[in-house]
Length: 91
Image (tube, rainbow, N blue to C red; front, side, top):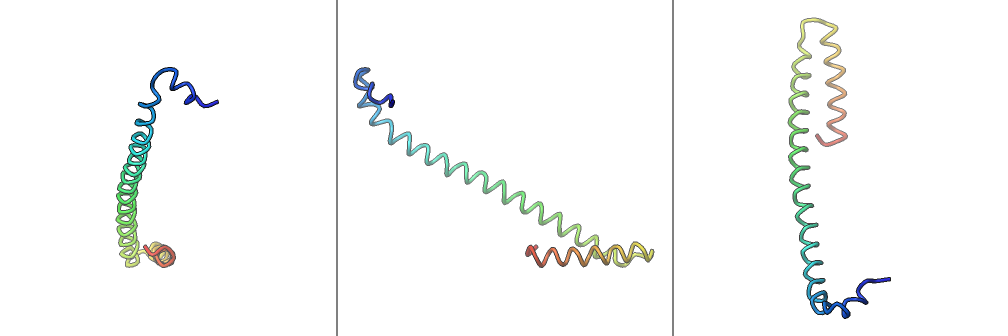
C-alpha cells in the first residue's frame, strides 16, 4: 500500500510533488559522481599494476644474464611466461 495516498491528509502532497523530481535528479547526479570516483580509483590501480609488471618484467629480463646457470634458466623460463602473458593481456 503506497504511503502517497496519505499525503493530502497531512497537507504535504504539493511539497512532495515538488520534492520528488528534485530528489530523483540529485540521486542521478550521485550515481554519476560515484562512478567518476570509482573510475579514478580503478585507473590509479591499473597504472600501479602496470608499473609493477614492467618493473618485474625488467628484473626478470636482466636476470637472464645471471652467472649461475640454474638461475639463468629459471629467469629464461619466467621471461617466456611473462612475454606470453603480456601478449595475451596487452600488458
